[in-house]
Image 1 (tube, rainbow, N blue to C red):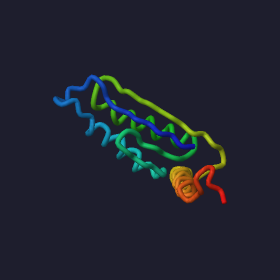
Image 2 (image 1 turned 30 degrees about the vertical axis):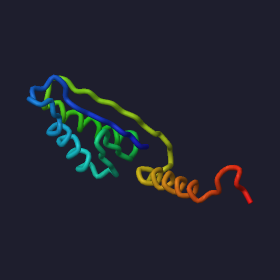
Image 3 (image 1 turned 180 degrees about the vertical axis):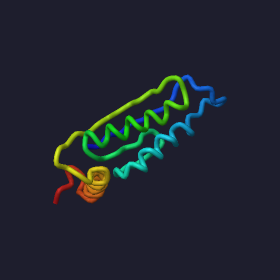
Length: 111
């Protein structure tokens, strides 16, 4: 399964409202887990079994809890049994589809 999640403290007292230290603590947990992962500006995506993913998400949430009295957690999961390598495979198929579409004749211009 793939799980994209975002976890951040709320109610903290950082003067500019930044949560980067708390997010860094969560990302350290994810990276230490050994699961395939990818972090972008909005979410961290991990790949593994149900139990592996949710254990990492719980540990990352616990790490963030140290930074404020309340934690916000957003999850999106793609549960596809017996598929692995999807953290990169889905993107590779998307990029291939874009190239294929760019190389295809325009509709109505078939020889």
